[in-house]
Length: 282
Ligand code: SF4
Image (cartoon, rainbow, N blue to C red):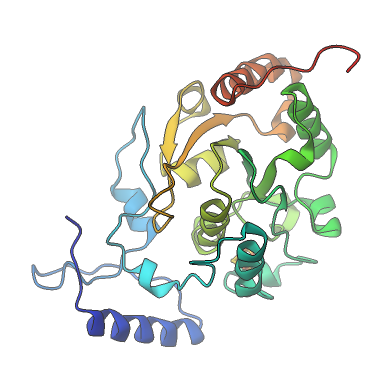
C-alpha cells in the first residue's frame, strides 16, 4: 500500500512547492529522513534512478503511486475524454516553457510532438535537432526520413503513429540532453503518453530508453525484449503499453550495418500489434 497523506497536508505541500517553482527551484532532494517524515519527503526521478539497480527484464513506471509529484503536477487533462482536447491542454500547460535551461540555449521553438492522438504505436526519441527546431516537428530531417521509411516498412503511415521526444527543446550543438533537462521535461511526455494510451512504444536510442525505463544498461541489453510501461497517474482502466527499444535513426545513418538489427526490433513490435509489412507495389 502506498503511503497516504492527509489531504490538507498534501495541499499545503503542493502550495509550498509551487511557491518554490515560481522562484525557479524545481529540484528537491531527500535529506536523511526520520521515520515520521519519510512518507512526506519529495523525491525526484534522479533519486529514484540512482537507487534503482539495473534490471534486465520487465520495467515498471518511473514513479511510484505514492509519489508526491503527482500532487504537485496538476493534470488539467484529467477527465477530458477527447484526446485532441486533452493533448491541447497539456500543450497549453507547457506554454512558452522556461522550466529548464534549454529554453535559453538557442531553441527556436518547442517541439511538442506530432501524429495520431489515438495511435496504437508511439515513437520516442531523444530531443529535437536543427531541422526539428526550425520546423517545430519531431523527426523531420534525415533521421526523420529514415524513421518514415521504418514506419512504412511496418505497414503504417507517419500519420498513423505519434512521435515525440524526451526533451522538447533543441540541446545546443545537438548535445545529449542532460539529466536535469530530461527530468524536468519528461513529465509532459508522460502526460502525452497517458492521453494517447498507445499499445506499444518504441524508444529510439539509449537516451530515450534509459529515461523512459530508468535503467542504465547498454543497448545490447536494452534491445530485444519487452518492458511493461505505464506512467504513474494514468487512467486506471488502461493496461499500459509494451515498450521496446531500438536504435535511433541518426545512429543507423552513421552505421547502416545495424539496420538489420533495428528491423528485427520493429518486427517484434509488428508481431505484437498484428501488423504485416506492405506488399510490393502497394
Ligand atoms: S526542454 Fe522541456 S522543460 Fe526544458 S524548456 Fe524546453 S519544454 Fe521546457
